[in-house]
Length: 234
Image 1 (cartoon, rainbow, N blue to C red):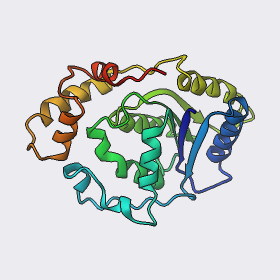
Image 2 (spheres, rainbow, N blue to C red):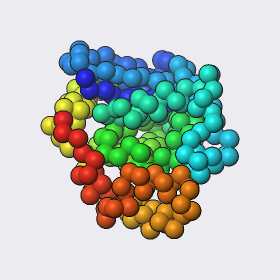
Image 3 (tube, rainbow, N blue to C red):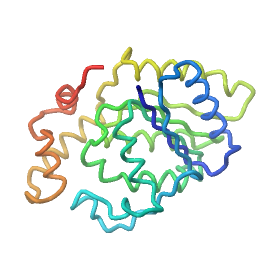
Image 4 (cartoon, one colour):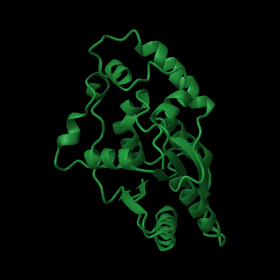
C-alpha cells in the first residue's frame, strides 16, 4: 500500500486551501482506493513550538516528542513511511502560517541529515499575493531534508479553482506508483557537499556526525549517489 502524507497549516476548515485539499484527497481515494492518506491539519494535531534547546541537533532527538499532547512523534513516523508528501499553507504576511512554521521548526534538524531523502512532494499555497514566497520557502526547507519538489500549486479563489485537481492527482499517482522518478537538483547537491565537508570535522559523538557515518553519507560524493545507494525497488 502506498502512503501519502499531508499537512495543512490552516485552522480554517472552510478555507480555500482546506476545501481544495479535501476535494483532491477524496478524489485521489476514489481513483486509487489502495492509497493510504495520513492527513494532518492545524486543528487536528498539536505541535508544540520549538524550545531552541538544540538537543535535536546535538543528541538527535527532541524531548517534546515523548509528550502525550504532542503530535510530532506520530508525524515523523508517517513522514518516514510516506511515498509522497503534500504540504499546504495559507499566505500570512507573505509567509507560511504559524502552524506550518512550527511543523518546520520541529523538523529542522532533519535538514542536516537528508532524513527524507528522495521523497517526492507537492506544495500548495492559498492567497492573493505572496504565494511564490510561501511555495519557495516550503520547497527550500524540505529540499534540505532530502525531499524533492515535483509541483507547486497556487490557489487563488476563482471559478476555475478546481480545474487542475485531476492533473495534480495524476502527478501524485505517477510518483507513488513509480511511473515517474524524483530526481536530485542543484539546491540539494550544493547542500550535500557543504554538509559533508562540515560534518566530517564534528566531534565523533555528535548526533549529526554519527548519522552521516552510520548511514553511509560520508561515503557518497553526491546526493544523487546517496539516492542510488538507498533506492529500494518499487
